[in-house]
Length: 279
Image 1 (spheres, rainbow, N blue to C red):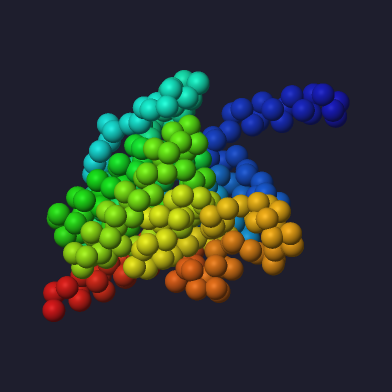
Image 2 (cartoon, rainbow, N blue to C red):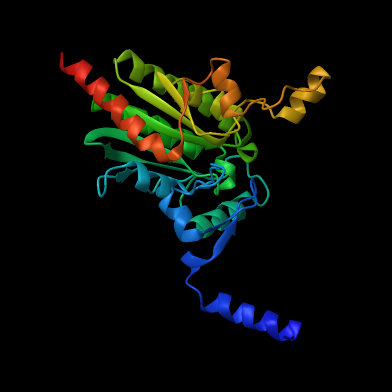
């Protein structure tokens, strides 16, 4: 067959295919998997187990009981406190692309019938960097949970503090940590789930303050990046440094849990905590 005609036939076939039936090549193992199969497997490669990045709303959809999630602070969004050039346009562009007001979605929902406050960060929105709006939403979520005596689960994913907001973004580290402490003083449960990547000021604040800290396989977890650390200490880092399995082995993470098993694990922890409180 004429190669040009063959290519046209292939393109015509691809255009007529349902997007769910298009193959996705895993960047880890190079194996092809239908998009529909990936979706059924929570966007985890069925061959090598690579966890793809997912949106905040999709994560909440697969973790919370069907129809139970109700968003809070939905309209809260950040501004440009330092008049950083081009920042407002950047925010507007991100909101249009993601359909989100900011880089975190917060609300209440049930997991295995147990009500909790759930927050999920979305790396599509400026790498889920923490500015004033993100910090405020996390703080309000903790306050709501403390007032209503609810456990908190936060799915963290962040590139760190948002540079366009300067010192205001760094203030959020202390603010969210204080909110987590008040929740803890009330004797309530906080589960932190670290996803890829969780770095910078988020790692150095509320993400590392959970009573129980879980992580998805292969997630990058740390404060500074590996390259910065290598340049600072002047030596090579161990294999797998800052990956979920490495930090679990060194005691920073309680357990690495696959996304396909995360809902079950969270449900068990919530039920155990609820049972303890009934005594």
